[in-house]
Image (cartoon, rainbow, N blue to C red; front, top):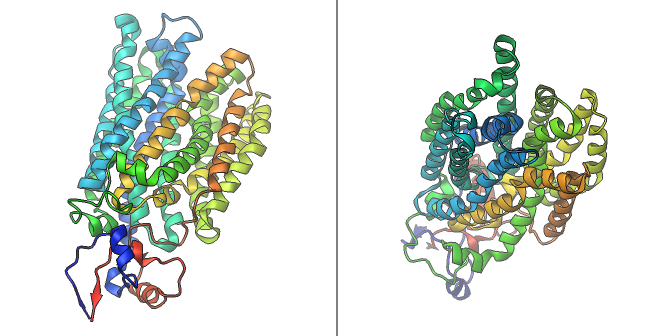
Length: 502
């Protein structure tokens, strides 16, 4: 069998209409990625999410301290709200980063953009640790803090979209849920690491230099720890290869067909062809991240302000919960490979609605044991949400436009609804006096996410749209080719395979 020299690109809609039968897979068309290479690729990606959430952990657990350091002249509650706005502003910038970095990742490659986002993120986090305080320059101190948070937001606009795209494209079809879940495991371990560094810094500095040590200088230390961590993370990013799925489509569609939904498109083309999937992604991301950021970035502030738990006590309760939850993610990811992504998401949305109010009620008891139990209740739906995010969301979009489409859907949602959760939750409490308002806020988006799931196609065990099957051994490749005519999970008309001719 000889192959023609037709470019390995997804066929246009007109070509699909004319061609019958659809192209057939050969064994050499199937991508074989062995387990060792998958581990290397995913490990190099996880470090970026670790760094991103390490900063969230630091900022979240130092929110009250940062208020004293940067907004000391503002009356309550405006000082704390100004600090939380610094967290929110980084998310408001994320869509800009996504709109720039996402399409760029579809043009020049996932690895190059992920290296850039890692370097920018690490540098911005470290620079926060050397900023002047309000005691030195007054309220002007908040401005450079906001600028650096905006730089972080721009870089993270490409980070998660690129990282999820990368791990999804590198993972074998049958185990995409398992391998992709490690990305968010790195995220929450990173947050726990940030919280732990804050706790250890607080213990050491206050025991040696007194109770004001953290506001005097100790708050800088956790941010400066990002320097050695960033160097290690950047080194790992330099080592990761480009994804096979991107390499199969790169450089072959210099003039893409604007009417072909599988071709590479810019922002307008993505919204034209994939607006339904973008809306589904926005709803799911909103449900995931309102719960996720409530558990992580907002909970330190809530426990300290509304429950009366100290900063150190909040870290002691939160870190073990996050570590246990993180350890569960690969098991939930593996479960999604067996039963599907939609059932796992349904478990997440349903448990959110059932558990959130009881969790906040238990939290109000104010004892350490009660806080630990309550955080565990909140962590249950978060675990089911995040374990399948990296395998589900990229699968909504075709390979040629995946990075860009992910960047739009994820960043618009996380900016408007997820990253603003701490700000909106605290503002709702201040407005109503009801400490259960964060629970209602989270439940509302869980309900919206559940509705969106009704329109989402199941993607477990299937090749990614616009990509050929990905397996772990050549024997599996032979099996895939042998059953391609009977397997309902394989649609060769959407795959970038050459035409086979006798």
